[in-house]
Amino acid sequence: MKVIIFGATGMVGQGVMRECLMDPGIERVLVVGRSTTGLRNAKLQEIIHDDFLDYGRIEPQLAGYDACFFCLGVSSIGMSEERYRHLTYDITMAAARTLARLNPGMTFIYVTGAGTDTTEQGSQMWARIKGKTENDLFKLPFKAAYMFRPAGIQPLHGARSKTAWVQAFYVATSPFLSVLRHVAPGLMTTTEQVGRAMIRVARNGYPTKVLESADINSL
Image (tube, rainbow, N blue to C red):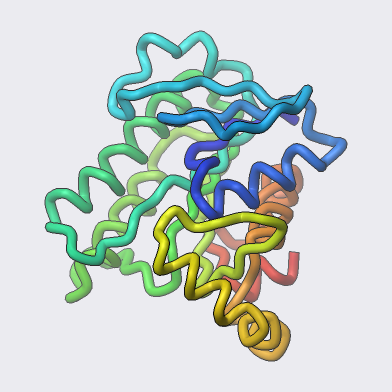
């Protein structure tokens, strides 16, 4: 299997990339991002790209892949609705539309979040925009599309948040989070489990198109 990862320098993307590089059934991992991951691996190829609304220049390099793991995302805290929509909906859909055209046999997996509002009518701005993103991804002509909606995610194996206070929180609460994910798998998963679940779903599918934390952990 050949996979593309967006957001590989973020906390979730780091974990997903690690699992892809370790999986013997994945022969190639293409990372598309604004900065390098700094890793060296025989399976890993990186494209540094600065316009996430236009992929014309690199389209030939995006063809021939079986799955895309889209882990790119930002927090809505302190952000206007227009800005959050641009960074969440516009950027995701630009990549997805390009990939659907180039790789119609692809499975597209998108990391959203617990509480996403697919009615697009709720009071929470982030949830409405995530919901619209999910809805419109399902309309694209991929072989299959799946939405991963984890609640809490514990970083493992060196995965780190780019936001200093978030990383400090994870470090301080790590023992508690480890307990929580065992006693309440519907509330907590890990970067390792997200990565492994994505790979498994890309290979074998899943009965439902939307996966919550408990689904991710069960895989």
